[in-house]
Length: 368
Image (cartoon, rainbow, N blue to C red):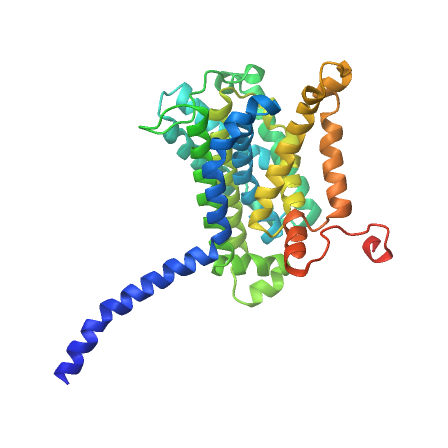
């Protein structure tokens, strides 16, 4: 018996090691796509920087914005796509995060990373304070959050003693960390390291108990409550998390831009974030990446087209601001007509079932 006990004790460390290795392998398998994407991002500056002047488009600079809006969009997707709580006021949290981080860095003189942490906390706190709107449902909730976005915009514009009003906040320090050089490449990596961590966290979250709870709430509040889920508390938690991610994105955005004013956080920003979620694919973590990538990159490409064509382009066409809204509207309308389930669902069907990601909108079934 003593020999058996000693033998089993010798085998236990190996069992623990095997369990740890299994967990690592399970993590790598579950996040295989994320790791591949991380490698792609890691080598992007190597090939993107040399061709930037040739194509008249700085891919690294644009990808910094894609990373920022990916963070905001994935938080909004948790709220709309998974929990089914429609919000048209996320420009408020984005703006609160931007102004909090900028003011702490500019007026208080604190390091950038402290400002970003405070931006997350401030946005989460605002989310908690306005959480009672979650008692509303459907269109009523959408209108209430729309009003929240408008109120936040008015405060940012009118509180001139704090926000500078329409003059905004200038000389915002660049995004950096202690010991890291300040340049576009380092900012690119900082943004995307944070974005990848957020994507991995949200991917685990939707598979957790909380993820199952918010999915149940999406289907039916009554059924979720009957299963023992605290519906109100789960809604508040996911709303606060979504607000915090919006604040994080806003804080990063302020330091990347170096200047902010209230007009950057008008209600159109909320519509843009919702469009990213819908176009990319609701109830899909990767939908946030796809939606942010498409709605940030495609307008930049359209803006660059006159430079590719040459100097003979008419001035009204060369000035992208003349038709910026048309391009954004066309992207949204065409995506909803031909790929209503979103980019990620369409591409997933293409890979798994060899089925076209597009639908025929003229079929009777599609109209219904």
